[in-house]
Amino acid sequence: MADNVGFLSGDGPTSGISVTLTAGTLQAIRERVGKRGVSAYLEKAARRQIERDNLDELIADFDKIHGPADPEAVAAKRARLTGGTSGAGAAA
Image (cartoon, rainbow, N blue to C red; front, side, top):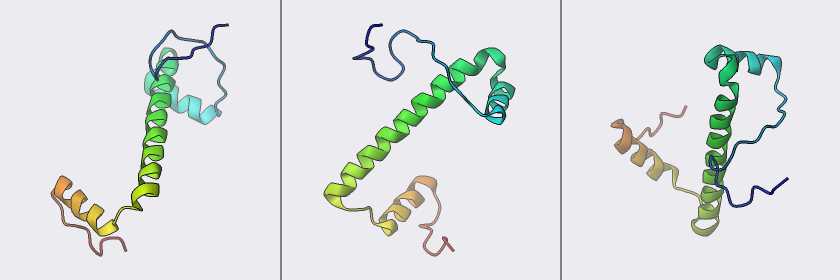
């Protein structure tokens, strides 16, 4: 079998694998996408998880260099983005 070296997430030919899921998880997926949509649903979920893992690694690298983000600055920027208040004291 050829090594799939060099493909980015979502690129390259498809490959069949065996995946084990709990019955409840599989049922929930099938209720959302039907019996024939399971593979596409899992592909999208795996890509999303890879993106999150990559983002977590970038944040960890940034924190190592610059230290953790200032919670007050994050709250202020979140408020600017969402049009809300800075949230000071909102986390009770």
